[in-house]
Length: 357
Ligand code: 9MR
Figure (cartoon, helix red, strand yellow):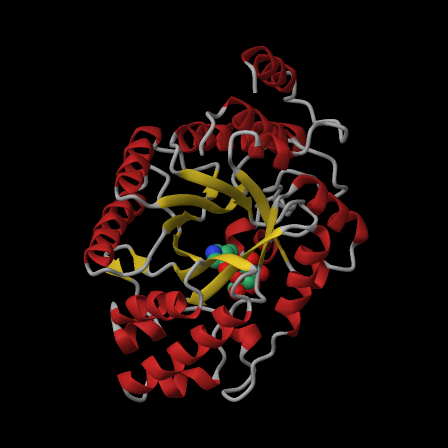
């Protein structure tokens, strides 16, 4: 974009503490102009909401399934793969020309009950069942899902997070999942997805440190990992540590890894005031994150965890419950699908970002 055009867009958007008009340029094209992919998570439960699906295909270049790629959805029993819900999301992506990300092959949550027995058997059985699952799932969507969150939230505050996979296989769970993914689809980008690394809070600092060490270890062992996913479930009550975040992103980029923002939303559970004020605080908080993040050229995509406040996991999780009983407003569009200041913050951040190849 020329400087004058860029100044114009940024200037026009700067007027928007106010909601963006629906006629504003879609987020996906503002992002794409700088080589960034913008997208969001969707759930197959909401595929029937025509207005929401219209908004998704207008604003997004890609989608990611909120739950349909998890073991609990794909594996009702040991012998059965149920691909129908994930296929439905893939069908939307195909029909609307959207990219599709995969989420997720190795996580301590959303596992079917039958798996516990196998994972507590022998490490060999655990390895076998993991390879079988990854192979079937990744191979099936091979060329179409170009990027998978292979491993999700494997770090706790002090190293590997205990959970069924780590308890059964230790770090090998991670290396097996990556290797099996690469074997199943050699051209798919393979991501290590992690949470809670962006604030000044002690556990975040510890996790940044542990994450760098983990990625260095995996790369030194030849593990086929292409990038880091930063979930970015931001919380207004937890200030962004801009200096440390900048340094961390640069260290990750220095390892030759891509960085993806995979699950952005902004929790306003502790923000007081009317919705207008809360929406402004949310947008400002996101800007402090996005300004640093998009300044790092290794950052290639930004996905929100949902698109409209009509549906958010935070409405169903204590982390998102407010003392006044009102619903959290964590996403760029309100429940009526009108753009909020957070959409303006995203638009401004994309318009002001540098081009990345
Ligand atoms: O938003 C998802 C919610 O609907 C599910 O019930 C939950 C358990 O599967 O997972 C939520 O998504 C999580 C994501 O998979 C990983 N990072 C944290 C997300 C919010 O909890």
